[in-house]
Length: 136
View 1 (cartoon, rainbow, N blue to C red):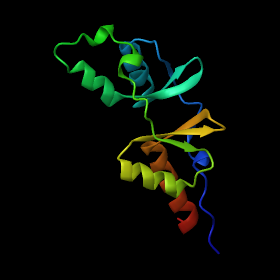
View 2 (tube, one colour):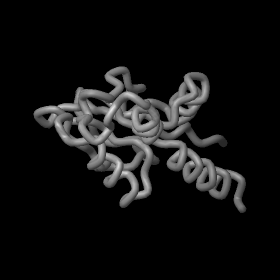
View 3 (cartoon, rainbow, N blue to C red):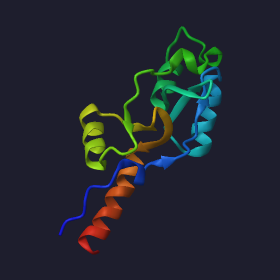
View 4 (cartoon, rainbow, N blue to C red):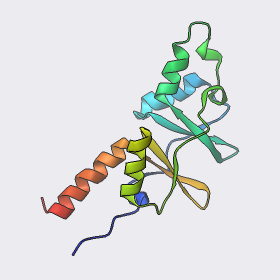
């Protein structure tokens, strides 16, 4: 008897750390460093508008003719984030993340941000599923 595939919300990080769209990039970098994270959902008026990654920050900091300390999150944020519903099957989400080569999925429920599922969450899910389903 096999168990069903769990939904992504079972393994996501709930209440992810977020940043306001009008905050300075240096503040975003500080938040990421202090919390040891690589993805920050961006909010505007309490609504999810995009994702900022550590890679995005490093990219703009590496541009010669640009003073990254003057930039705000809106200047850099990726508005096209990979978004999934909280009830999406875990295998489907992991498969799509691998295909798209993205490190996180924004998890929503009824159009609202409820969590983030990252590659770290995926590894924790894999470890738990292997232990519980293979009996080790």
